Image (tube, rainbow, N blue to C red; front, side, top):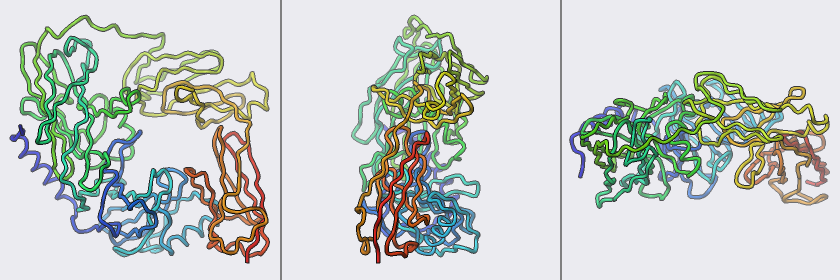
Length: 561
């Protein structure tokens, strides 16, 4: 049964919001129909997705075009994250972004490599002047790829405003075929204080959903009293792809009045960290399911709109309420969830005891925890809420709660390592112990005298780890003494199983060469088309260093005409 009265308001709000953006200014960045593997602002680990992920037919090397005239204002090349990324500023004040590229168009590629060779580094960030690299609409600017943190070939595409805020590109007329309604995967109810009960419990509860033929849902009714809220797990799919993507808008209504809205039109990078307060972070940590809380609690996110009582429902005894959730994609395909709430004191039971520890965190205060040779510094506003924290040190292992509490900023872990000899200290690092087998994962570690420190946003178990093993380096596509005249690329595999690769340097006959590092394949690649190798006999030397300073050197001879 459709909830018709608010629907007219919904459509009018959507129409007014979407008409504020130029509709014919930007064109398709690819020469193929747009099919998405990721939508704007969908929920990712520790951030909102800042653009559209456009499928490239499982290939790399497709032409990437400027969506409007302008100039290349920024180029960034990274091992991780966006990989090879290009930023074009347009006369109307917006900037388009193209990421995970294979390479740039010839003129831009030459500009980048010139600076890489000057700086003798693969990773680089450049800010060309407006007259250095102008581009015309629909001109070739790059080729699609799989660089950086990409999980497969695709183009990551963004539009940002003058304040560098990412905007939903579909607001500008970037069109994707979508007639499919969103899917609601699960619904939970949360008692929100010590006086709130749902079905005789103060615990979060999953509610049974019944799917209707028209794409809507009916949730099982509940008995409740006190302040409660809801959380939803939902996805959207477009017509031409089976990917589980993010939705565009979520609204809730109580007895016909709207009391909460999530509106995914734009956000700032400064606020994207608050995603872990929007979702039920503990639930995600334990179940790998992102429940979006449909109530606001200590969260400054700008995407939270039109909240009445912060989305919290105050249920009184002997009342009946109808709670509805509208989930919509950008094309206004929608799914509704309907829930009956009966206010009843009969839903109350004995309050659950609060788990306590000797250590209590006040979110608005700085806290230092110290035991034996370990100390932890939580700065003001590290956390959103006050809570009792588990803190225990045994030998060099720190148990610091579980990773079930969302953080806003880094905190610092410090180890006094004066009991170790100086040679061993050089090889020590602070590791987070991961998984059932407690595998040590390197956390960026600094040393000052006999103190090691690491900054992190994750609670969990930490320990000192030692790495005395050098990185490995092996030739991938050639052998020592081989003629490589017909080769386009020179490839070397590098790896480090302990603290991980920190940096590398490659030379031929003592001259630095540009080798691109793909951490996913653990491969360094040199392109002979760079034309810096002119001798017939060539001595390749590669030095690789891990994160505690262990280094390995590889040398090989090759010939080339």
